[in-house]
Image (tube, rainbow, N blue to C red; front, side, top):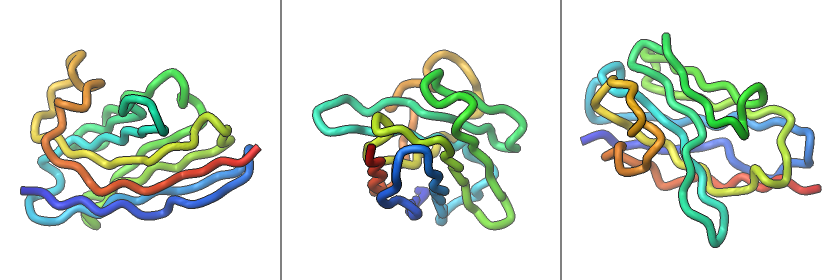
Amino acid sequence: QVQLVESGGGLVQAGGSLRLSCAASGRTFSNYAMGWFRQAPGKEREFVVRISWSGATTYYADSVKGRFTISRDNAKNTVYLQMNSLKPEDTAVYYCAADGSNIGDSTIFRADRYPYWGQGTQVTVSS
């Protein structure tokens, strides 16, 4: 089992920045690829970004490419999501997720690929 706790959400104006953190506990953090998903009201949970075990490989949704950056610190058991140039359409609950497989196939964009999830943190971007 892996326990995940997100933090760093909040209210920000369009064009602003936020940094989300996800702290992991329970198993060896470096054995898990980590992802961020988000879910806006009335919408399905959508893939945002993923980082491999070592941090060497990342995958971004087109909607956030160039604005968001994922990173991880395996010594601190934490993954980060730096979000810049935020837009109102980025408003959602952001979830951290862990995947025990490092294989980067097409399923990495699906929520059911990830067995472990945090409780989510709200990000609201005002126009």
